[in-house]
Structures are given as structure tokens and as C-alpha cells.
Image 1 (cartoon, rainbow, N blue to C red):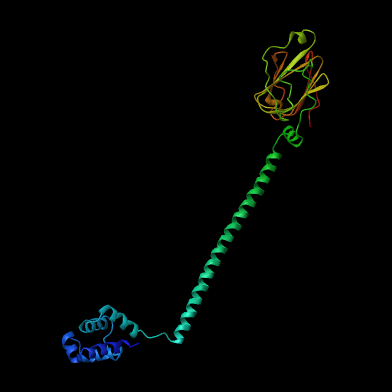
Image 2 (image 1 turned 120 degrees about the horizontal axis):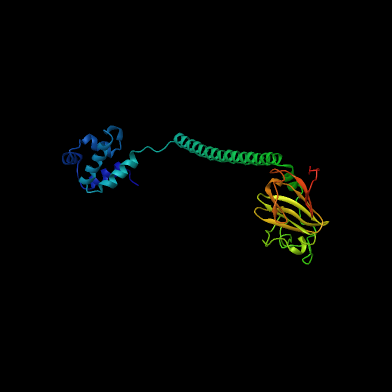
Length: 284
């Protein structure tokens, strides 16, 4: 395959044109034209001037000017030396190494983020446990006893029992601490109050755990939720253990009694047909 310069010279000689004729037509000196044909590109002015000479010479010979410029650039660009190739390979290796280090640094950054998030979650968990313990230590004795020993219903009254009332019955499917509100607002039954029986109504202004024994039988054990109430009928005695006495309103045979304690106070109350009896031993 003929070189760039040989191609120009062969085309010129084929058309029987001298360098002088080309120089007159293109306004390019013979010396520059000969440098193109001999590919002595270092004798040319360089840059855009060389491309202009090539285009003018190619047009005068009837050749494709842009293809001639492309051929000139290929011929004037020195082939890479072995040393240049080695330097280029080293540069590519260094570039790949930097990319790997960048990816590794990015992965390490995400690792640090994950570690920080894990430490935050662990700290929050420890804080939650300590807060719960602090809250436990600030509760009243009755509340701590109720939480440490959950109260479940014990031997609820049979439906036909004379002591049973709609408010004191607990269904089989009810949760342990559920206390239904009284379904009857009628005054105590004359059949009980008139023949020595009596009633006590407990109304929860605040939640309070209770254990109630009427005539020797446990009729309720659990938490009475505000604003529900509990109506108890008895013939001889009613024992009431309350964990939040200040949160209860107490009625005896329809008459409201004075408050029997403070909020959070745990205490035992005893009733008989004559009313509230004194009881000195309080719950510990």
C-alpha cells in the first residue's frame, strides 16, 4: 500500500503535472509541496497550515480533500514506541487500582454507618430497660404487687348463687384483669337488706386491683378498670383488699362513704351488716 506522500506524487505524475504548476495554482511553495510528497512533515509550518496545504494540493489533483487530510494525519502521527505502550499500560493499571480503592472506601463507609446504627439501637434498648426499671421503682406497693403477681379470677360465682350479680360475674372468655361495669343501677334488693343482708358498691375513679371475698367465698379478683363499678351482695361479711384505695368510691347500702385512703394506698376493708369495721393491719 502506497504511503501518503507517494500517493500524492503518483497522482501528480499520472496527470503529468509538475510541482511548479501545482505551486502556481495553489500558492504553495515548491519546497512545501516536496516536503508533503517526501513526508518530511517537520519542514512544514505545522497545525492548520499543514491541513490547508493538503486540502489545496488534493483538490488541484482532483482527490477527496477530507480523505487526504485523514491520510495525512495518520501518516504524520508517530507510531507508539514500546516504551510508550508500557507507560500506557502502567497508567491503566494505576487507574484500575484507584477505582478499586474508591469502591473499597465506599464499602467501608457503609460499614461504619451500619456500625453506628447498631450502636444507636443497642443504646436505645439499654435506655428502654433502665427507664422501665426506674418506672417500676417509682410505683406504689399495690401496683408493684399487682404487676409482679398478675391476679386471675378465682372460682367465680355460679350463675344461680344468691350472692352473684351481673357486675360480679366474669365470663370464661374474659381476660384476667377485665372488670365489667355494673349492669343494674337499681337500689339494693329489699330481700337482702331487709333480712340482714347488705350491699357494697365499688366505683373505680382510677384503675385499682381488687380481691373481694363475700361470706367466705371469693367473688372477684382482678383489676377494676375506671369508670366501671362492682356491686357485692353478702349476708354476713365482705373482705375487700384494694391496691389503689384513693381511686375508689365506696357505697354501703346505697350511701356514699368518706374516702378510705390515698391514691396508690393498699389497704384491707371489712364490712358486715352494721357497716365498715375497723381493720388495723394494712397490706404490705
